[in-house]
Length: 475
Image (cartoon, rainbow, N blue to C red):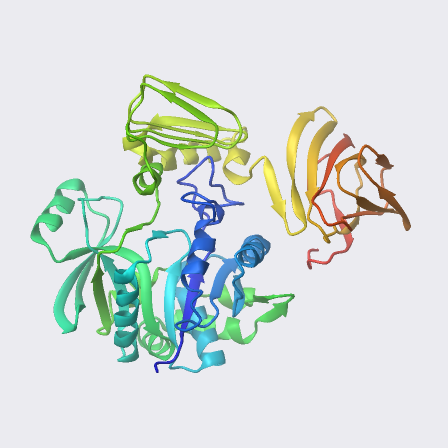
C-alpha cells in the first residue's frame, strides 16, 4: 500500500475581490460562500480521509491563527501542525516551508498535496482518480500541477500548455501562459491542449527541495533556516521572521515550475472554481428559474441572472437583470454581475481613502479566539458594542488608560474580575469598570454569553489594551 499523502492547505491569502464580505481580517477562505461551511473548512473535509491522507499541514499568518484553529475544530479535523508565516512571501516560500517541515517530520519521500483553501471543488470520482494518478506521478519524481479542462475563454486564469505524454493522462508541461486577453483565450480554447492553472499541486517533498536548491537557492536557504529556528507557541509553529523575510517574494510557477524539467500537468475535468469574483460565486451556486442566486433575507421580483447576498438587512430587487448586490453589515456593493472583476479596482479606491480604508480591512463584527464583538453605535467619546463569549472561554486580564466600561448581561452567565474581586452576573445585571482598573471577563456557563458594552472616554481604539495575562499568547 502506498504511503499516506500529507495535505498542505494554503490559508494565508488576504484577497478582497469578494468585497464587502471578504476583507483583510476575514478573507474569503473563512466565509461560507457556497454552503454551510467555509471554503477553508470544505478544503479540510476534502482531505479528512485517513486511508489516503495524513492530518493536514496548514500554512497561514498569525492574524488568522485562531480562525484556522476554531474552524478546524468545528468540522472535527485534527491538524499535523499550523505553520505561521511571519511575512507574506508568495507560494514558492510557502510550499518550500511545507516541504522542509514535511521532510523533517515524515521523511523526504513524503508526498505533498498542495491546496489553496479558497477554491470550490467538487470531489467526485473523477477528482479522486486524478488525486491518485497525480500521487503516483509524484512518487516517480514528477512535480505535478492540476490543469483544469477549460469550458470557456476565461481571462481571469493563467493557462498551462500540455506537452508530450508521460504516463496515463499525465503530460509534460510545454509552457505557462499568463492571464490572456480575450482573443488569445479564444485561440487557446479552439486549439486544445491548454488548461487553466488551478494552483493545486502534487509533489514529493525531497524532489521539490532538490529543485529549489538548483533553481531557487535563495528561497530554500532562507526557508530552511527559518523552519530550523521555528518556535512552538500553543498549538502553532512560528516560522522565524528574520530568516524567512530573506526569501524572495515569488510564485512557485516562476521560481520552479517554469524552469524545471520535472514539471508535469494532469488535465482534469471535475468542477472547479477559484471563486475569484462574485460572478464566479454565482456560477457555482444553486439558481432559481430566472437564474438568480439569493443568500440571506432577500425578495426578488421581475429580475434575472443576478446575485443578491445580504448578512442582515432585507434586500428587495425589482426589475433588474445582470446585477450583483452584496450587503454586509456596514457596506453595500452594487454593480453588473458580468463585470464583477471591477470589484478589485473599487477596493483599491476605498483603501486609498482615509475615510473608507477601514471598510476594506475589518468587519463590523470582529472575531477573537474567545468569541468576538459587534460595533453597534459610535459617537463622540462613547461607543456601544455587543460582546459574545463562548462557553468556557475568557478574555485577557487587562486594563485601559483612556476609557471606562459598563457591561450589561443579556444572555448567559458572566464571571467578572475587577481588581482581584470576582462577581457573578446573570441576565439583566450590570457592572461598572472604572478607568484604569484591572479586569477580566469569563463565561463559566454552557451557553453563549452575550453582553452590551458601553465604552466612554477620550480614546476608544482597540490598541488601548494592556494585557497582563492571556490564555492565547497575545501581548
